[in-house]
Image 1: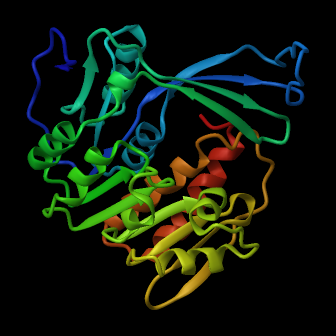
Image 2 (image 1 turned 135 degrees about the horizontal axis):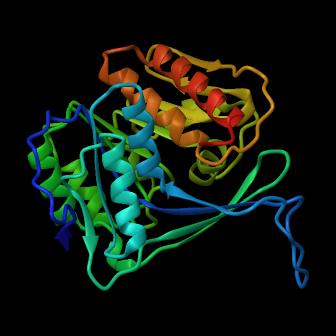
Amino acid sequence: MKDQSPGQTRRPQPAPQVAFIGRANIDITVRVPQRPVAGRTMFASAPATTTAGGKSLNQALAARKTGVLTSLISAAGDDPWGTFLHRALTDAAVDVSFFQLVSAASTGVAIIEVTPDGENYIVLARHPETELTGEHVHRGLQQLQAPIVVTQLDLQPDAVDAVFRHHRAQTIVGNLVPHPTLGRTALVPLDLFVSNEAEAAAILGRHHVDPSVAAEELRKLGPRAAVVTAGAHGAAYSSPDHTALIPAQHVNALNTSGAGDAFLGTLVAQLARQAPLPHAVVEGVAAATTFVQIGGR
């Protein structure tokens, strides 16, 4: 891997308040009148759009938008799309000290189909050489020393383990269904676990109509607190003191792709400002609600 600030002199930056660890990729989004059926060509209802994406990149941008200093520990291919991602991050003033381009690897691409009701269907193609390693994560966390760390739990186990071995973080937040070899044990070291309803059901082995119940059951698996996002219904949280559902305002959703990342980025930004979890969830729901109304970008 190589540092990807070619031809630029890096200026010292203030230490980030939140470090995000996970994937960055290109999103190619098409709007379709309905989901395609086998054997038939479906025409998109608008031109395809190409944007910076990936869960951790989206979350870092969302948190930075609130004014919190953020850093992204990630990797992409050493190709034009990787440069595109780097530029999107630097334009948003996200620290890219540990966003690296990998020679001979291609940047991951997500194909996103958006139907008229705003629902999205995503397929992600990623290059194995851009998957984070434990050494990359360890080195980044040691130097950044961010008090809040947000990690995708579906990364390779050595990368996730590097997060758990980092004892300087005041708060560790986990997202997504843990890597199969980690399983539920990956929830135990977390201060906060955030998932959507489908991910919660995959972990718990059953779907709960009430996301508050799912949040409480997830918390009982080990994290100090858990949050379950429930789309148009809002988000539920469960802490040792309280469990509740924060409802969302009813709006016309144009595109729900990335709404969960807007929620999580905003939530951790509030935690970085020492806001209590209930307030952070309220702000996260508000941010996601606004996000879906503007078509996701």
